[in-house]
Image: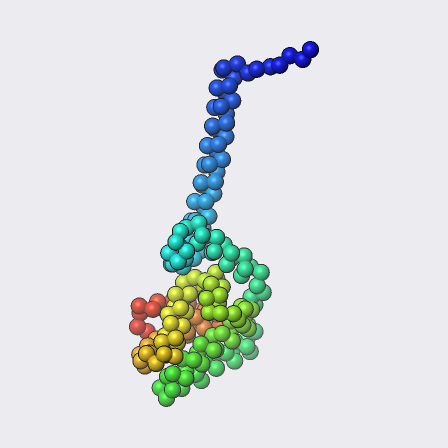
Length: 199
């Protein structure tokens, strides 16, 4: 006949204590892992992290979105331009900028188009603006707000509500992103929408 073993009261307490410790250790591991992930994403995305948290209404959903962006961009084949390609794009921008005084509205649309062409040449997919700005935010988080500000002026211009000063700002914002994508090191600083740089 088999003997059935029943744990004693002290053994039950010890098992319960071990279970509580294991649960606490698991909770602590998940907590510190989440904190570490939050710090990493906040460092990488900067203001875009805060914007995404506000947009998604919480940290968890925002971080899932930012990590999805990272994974998506990692799968892209982003390339550097050859010297002749970079020179061609730089010349196209110089030609565009020289036409601003005579045709500010047309130049803003051309600047938007030239930035898209450069993004496509580097390997970014040409989908809707939100998707493009999300992709840009992974490698150029300091500039995505500038890109959004430029695009907002393009939309205002399409509605007929953007004055010449706004159009000038849009060209400057596009230029900052253009230089960064072109990997021009002389304009490595971001121009934020609140600043008033000159064309």
